[in-house]
Image 1 (cartoon, rainbow, N blue to C red):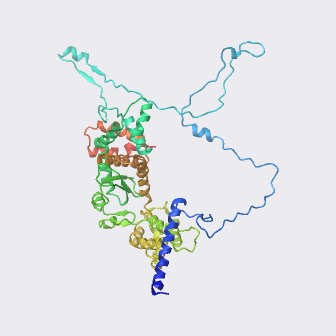
Image 2: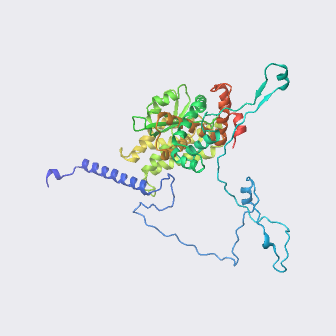
Image 3: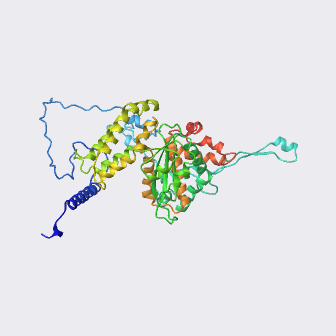
Length: 500
């Protein structure tokens, strides 16, 4: 055998590691293609990708002796009536007319003796468009007119439109926003529905209304919410890509910032930017010096003025992706997932406690478990480029930020709060595909911020938007920040009118 054919021990170990990494990648891709997308563990369920296990049919228990009469399921009485109670009732009468009233025996006309309600069914009434014609009434004082050389006339006050000289009444404008940002229906598909109602609109009209709505008032509310967010103690942050045709770059980004769960004034803001660089969150959070909870994106570590808190869900996800087969209970990655699940399980019953009580619980129980988890991570030896090795490296890189959750009971173990807000935008992005201009992307962020913040504060989003579009143009000083304070989602005035 020649010298070239001899495989050294080092080469063998290298090939062995390379083979393990390739097998891991194949298993991961197969699971991504055909496996479940959920990150929950299914104890007892057969893994379709585990070739080492065979399916064992469950044993069927012997049927127990039963009575001759089968058990009857109790029907819940009054459930349907309770669901229909909030809706107005319209009587539908079914009567006999003409010859139908003749008696089948003597042919005499039968008289009515009563009516019985036989059923109740909900009926959807299709929406329609009405035209409200505003008449301004004028009044003259005849006594003054007889005594003076000129007439004294007084006219009733007519409310100003939010967008003058357009079809964008408060209700129409609100509906276009509900369709796009809640139902995720882009403007070019909305125009078909408006056409069915007889109102011919264009995509450009709807898009321009949204941009002007931000210029005429919603943008000012956004800035007030931004200033309020900077005064809060806990802020969550995340970012996602977005497409703007006007941009020279392939992707722009939406940065999403949300209030902590313990804050009284709930705020969710979508800030559009041209990049994913450090300057964006640094400028947005200018003056903020409290807790910022994020994922492991390195940009957030460069924000020296904040105390960064990591996300346990992201740490768990790395270990979950490294597990390979869920049935492999001996996997080191499975142990990492188990540690994370144990901490989440400990935290769950503490959600209803006060921040001080939660702080005490974390110090007495969670702190030791978290320390054990990171000590285990330091003791593990894994292939550096394997998914398990990367999960270990990621967890250790987040240790200091993750342990910051022990500093305050108002903090949470995960960043899921803002992740859900990002998902709202991502679902819409799949339908809208892009924004034509930076101004259009900015308006989308402002409108989403107003709507999502309204919902987070327990408001009816439709009522709130219509209320804003009716009241804002009639302020004595349009854009006045002091006057706009009464129109923020958490103000008592708004809650009294727009609560769900």
